[in-house]
Image (cartoon, rainbow, N blue to C red):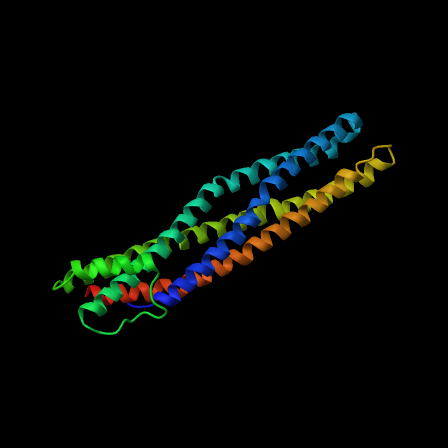
Length: 250
């Protein structure tokens, strides 16, 4: 049941992945705002074109719908990222407690410390206090060890669920925004060519839609890299931790 150093390393890596994914997803609200602004620009172009703007009206409707769908898909991701950050913080604290309990156990058995690199001053003070409190009661120490590991596993499993939610969100963004925005861009390009001879210049809106589609795709791809890495790293620790806890619990 002992993997303090490797789990701490994974926790640090998971934190970096979360920061990267949060930054990528953080760009999405601006893209939604720009989608909405493009819908407004297209609406103005439609009003100027009058009866000739039947195709342009379809582009406007699609842009407005995409903006609303994106907003709905992203939902309360900011809150969920804050919760994930709390999970990592509790994970790190749980690892510190586990290291303290290992040091207490070694002290009770008059064995050398099992920890590499020692403890920080705060953990060392806790270790000394708990060594005195657990004297002659190793069963209590084992219960504390088990509870510390259970709490860490619970936090890691919570992060894994969040990573799955992020993957589903990205799949939805790919369907709703990336593919749809490219389709709307093609529609807009066709309408720009069709209406140009009538003196309606829809090309700037058409070009902006295509550029926006590329930006959404790039942003989603950056987020997907971090989310995939996050999921992979969590998988490496969940099964061994769960197996160790089940073994001890038998």
